Length: 270
Image 1 (cartoon, rainbow, N blue to C red):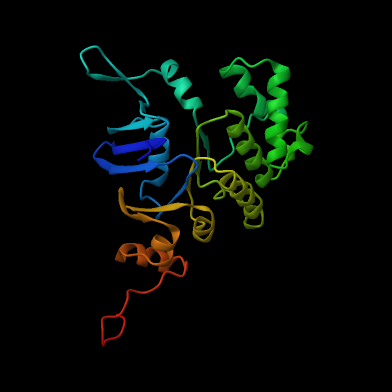
Image 2 (cartoon, helix red, strand yellow):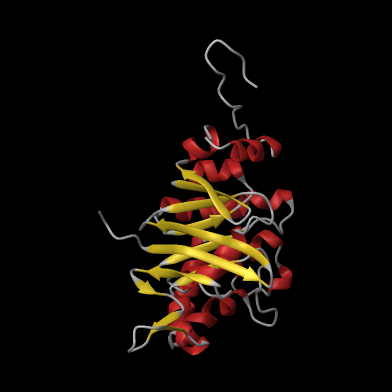
């Protein structure tokens, strides 16, 4: 059996007395797209932020290609948290696309995409611009390379943010509800870009409320609620034929077409 690209092992996150994540464990295989769905407040976004240590887990471990993320083994086999300088190379391997776009307003689109490779990888400007243009072309934004963020629609800004993540040349891309801040008519253009990336067999984790999109693009779906993974499996298993009552209730509430619980023999569905 092959070693997973990313492994989340018994992840916990607590703020004061409030537990957000209560022992989350799952793997991401190479070239796999995993969609995480669930109600607001279930811990989906916190899980993503812990994976690349934007949030420090309260307990548990993250492994990328069997390397501990955010922790360093000491000679006595104890672990200590890495500082930001030590974390920087690891974070470069795990790109994140946020709900909001976080583009530098004083930089052009090209510079927003190129600045990461220049600052983090020390890439020469000409090479970084060549990479930025290639990534902008991939998300159909090359024609806006000389524009500034304020001149773009929300959907265009999010596509630039995706190009910026791609320019990191990461091993994993995390999407944290990338369409939630967009007007409805702009959602499709961003989802189309993500769909193309999934078709390229990139390794991605997508937190989304777009259930039908998750069914279409994900290799595997995880349903979270209350800081726990309730069930996971193929889209057909989790979305079309959920086994847990909480999953069925959630999908029914949002009109995702989850079937009712199967009727007992000789009876009717409850």
